[in-house]
Length: 199
Length: 433
Image 1 (spheres, chains in turn yellow, brown):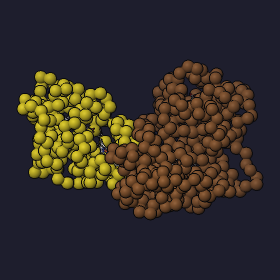
Image 2: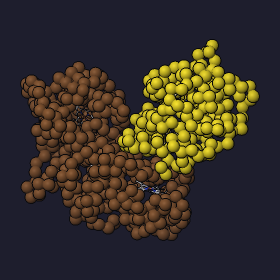
Image 3: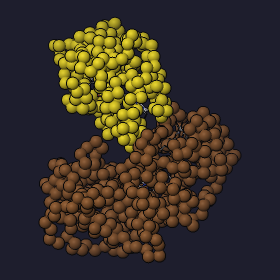
Image 4: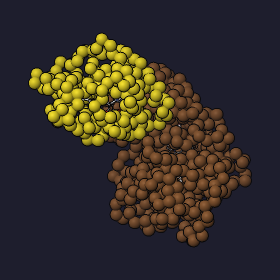
């Protein structure tokens, strides 16, 4: 996995680069779905699309299993550069959602401690704000898609620019949880159906 | 020269390719009436023929163009960028309305053999009928039987998006007169059966010439230059000549090494990447050992007799000593862990760079892109979990890229020429896939 380390860090623990995501410890089903989506061009990031273009499913599964099993320490939380109001908005959206605007609580799928859920919902820890904003943006603009029904596209579609900044900022301030393991399959309410997370 | 000369030069991966048609040009082509034969009733296809057809379709790599990645098999719609606009491959499933379900074996053979579609007239040469014309009628019928067994997908062909005048198919007549020769492969009786089998596959279904043509055969005519200047957005990859040992000629390779390269994507002498990785992934890895060996025998013979030592001048030390010094520093820090301090690699997983022709060719496009984009050889049955090379575009300056590429082209007795930071920079914007 040396070819991946230059961007994702040894063991997929992430690097100092703002935009290169951590891979370690995310559910392997989630990582596998992403690798397939990059290979087939449903998720676009040209350097990754190129590297994976001619790799068979079984190898992508092996890569996913490897990174899912790694447990390097999380990076220290970010010092926020946004106002307290924005952080408060972020916290409230992430933990309670906003029913009036059809925004579900992120924790209802990503877990109360945001470590994700087996087999295919990722944790939201150890990601930088610019990466989180870019992903939510990519769903809104259709350059990232997941298996239908694509629940994240619906969630992202209900967020305003300010909401995105707020949730990205607040999530990146969270400290490491005592137990980084994803929640067991089927253990979270999931207010919407997600094609990538069969239940 | 016809306006379509550049088709084949850009085709599916916009690689800088000239076409085999050029070599076989000369005989004019007349429209024959192969189309007028009656449609035979669709016979219940014999399972063995279908299976043979599936194998031959692999050998022809039909899937690479006629299937969108992750999409339905042979439903077409895959975009192919050309300097003239975008072409979309056709639906060749058994769907009667939108595929070729209503086609006869004769109509199918007309497409393969003379580049004429039952439904839309003359076919653009992005569909490599210039090579497929060599395929026998029996093999064409087997592929036809197989395609008729592929589950129907109702998906109308997407209209091509071509600029005037290239959107006019009748212009293809001029192109064909110059560059297309109809004709089934004819055995060379002075050669072995194995050699002839290899030649049939390489020149016919394999359509290797679509990318690999001795560019020198055209010798930089003004026509060829015209296409470099703007019409081809970027010379992304260089498909080396297979007839010259200065490039990718395999004259001094062992048959075992050639076979490994074609079948698994890696070999003790080098690995495939870019467009060639696609060919191995979708096509060559599925071929039988005897067929791979036959192709190897033929490929080896192509370059036998061509001089072994590249004739290029060595890098002038005084001009490039700075590049070489910086290059060595970069190499030792970033590359030696896989390719070895002396460039010997750890074959077959980490290819050698010393004495590797493919990095010393006059065109330095491939090694530059390799350093910028990294890459994995294709994951194949023979090498299911290849080791990869990281991309360096995000971590190296243009000067560093130029220096390290110059270094590997000239160190350890290699005889490539130096490259500039500008050349490295130009390739940063080449689309990665």
